[in-house]
Length: 214
Length: 244
Image (cartoon, rainbow over all chains, first blue to last red; front, top):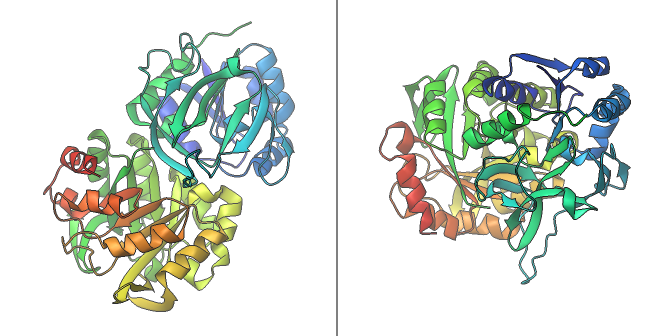
C-alpha cells in the first residue's frame, strides 16, 4: 500500500511522515508531484498556516485537479488541520477564498465571545476530548472511546453544511468546535493526529486500514 | 481545553542544561532521552530553548528537534536564535510545531507579523524574559536574560499579540531555577492584557505552585529542573494541577 503525503510547502511533513511510518505503513512518499497521486492508495493532505496561502500552494503545484481525481476514484483522503479546512467550499479567513469543495461547507473563525459574556482565548491550543457527532464505526475514530483527548492548534474551524458530515466535535467554553468531518472517502481532522500521542497514532492506523469506496 | 503541562528543556549545543537564574549552567545529559521519557509519561507539550543560540547562532538545535520528532508524538515549541522565516521553516520541517522568539522580535518586531502571516498565529509564540523593576512593573530582557531592552513587559506582550503572536511564553528571570514559585503577579498582568494563551515558566518548587499559576490566568505551565532532577514526576504535577 502506497501512502502519499502532499508537499506544497505548508507543513510539518517530517512528523506526519514519521507518524505514518510507526503506524505501520512501509511505502511512504512525501511528494510535490501531483502525478504521484495516481499511484497512491492513501493520500494525506497536511498543512499549517493561512488558508489562502495553502490553496495558492496547492494550485501552483497543480494538486487541485489531481486531488479531485484521486477522490473520484474512491480512495481514502485525510486532511489534517489546514489540510482539513481546505476540503470545504470556502473560508472566511482574510476575505473569502475558495477551497477544494470536497465537503460542502465553510471555514469560520471560532467565536471570541461565549454565551455567558466571557471571552475565549484564541488560538485554541491544547488537548480536548473528542465527542461523537455521528457513528465512528468504519471511520478514522473507530475504536476510540468518546472523550479521548487529541491536540488542537487553531483559530478557524470547519462548519459543514450537512450535519451528517460532522464526525466529532469538542467543547470550548460552551461552544462546539469541529474536530473531524467525513463524507464518503474524504476525512478531515482539525486536530493533529501526528502530535496526539498513542491516541493519534491509532487514528492514523485506522485511516491506513480504511477501504476504498469504489 | 485542559490546562497544559509542558516540559521545558534548555539546550546548549547538543546537551540538556539547567541554569540557575540563567547563569551557572550545568549539563544534564542528552535532551532526547529526557524528551522521550516525558513523552512516555504523558507530557502535553515539549519546549526546547537553545539558550546560547541568540549569542552564537543555532548549532545543534535543528538536529535535536529532528531526533526528538522521530519518536515523540506530542507538540514541540522551539526557540533560541530564530531570526528569519528561513530559520522558522527549517525548524518546522524538522518537526517543530511552534517557534518561540524573543531577542529577534525585540530587535525587529515586524518578524512577529512575518512569521504569523506565513505560518499562522498559532505557530508564533512570543517569548518574554521578564525581570521585575518594581512591584507590578517588569522589563523585557533578551539574549537569555543578559541584555535589558527598556521595554515594559505588559506593553510588549500587548504589542506582540497585536502583531500576530498567538501565544505568550513568559519566563520570570527572578524566579527561574529558584523553586520559589511562579511570579503570579506577572502572569496576572499579562493574562489580563492579551486574549491569547499564556505559558508560565520559571520558579516551580512546591505542590501549590501550578494551581497558583493557573489561578493567575496561565493556560499552560512549564516545568524544567524539578523534572530533570527527578524531584517530581509528571503524574504528581498533573495531580497538583487539578486543584486549579
